[in-house]
Image 1: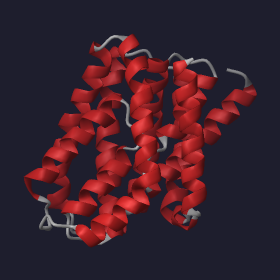
Image 2: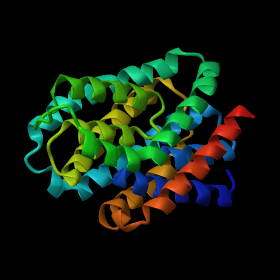
Image 3: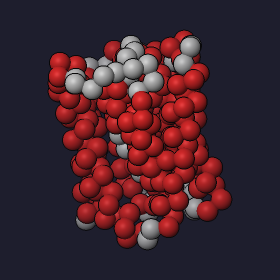
Image 4: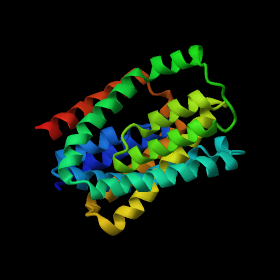
Length: 251
């Protein structure tokens, strides 16, 4: 990796840490950059997952005030995230690399669609919610969080968007408290997957450490000023790099 490539990976880590703390989809920033500097797709995904863990910790600490009083919820939903994340990581290692290259463009496309449609979906759900909401979300939320964990352990782009959508629909709570919960659940998914990858996968440590350093800074930025970023510009950036990743994988 050249010095300029290293700077690019570090900057991508800052952007991903910021975006992940605010809403999710940071992998759509870092993953294309890792592909661009020459990492194979699976190695890029594994190194990215490991690198984003410190940023997730940083974001959780930034939202610690909003986490007060949520212990029982975090234990309940966190168990689903942990088991789902581990299963997703196992699937990444068990399925052939060719399957990953074939599946990920589709996953990126779905993630981009969710990023683009998120404002409309949130508005629709707010005015057409027919499912009773509770403080804990019921079995439906537990199953949804588990499924999101499987997705996050396998690839992870936009798992934050999925979690916010699920909890916004099924939980009766303030958005900032829900976002704080989302950050913890995403941390658990990335964390359990990263620990698993340490023992079974090839990791590009240069890339992982650069992303880790950048994402720690981004996590603090996201928790302090990230919510002031223009949503349209943020979504446009995510879509642009996501399309670049799809083109890179397909070609």
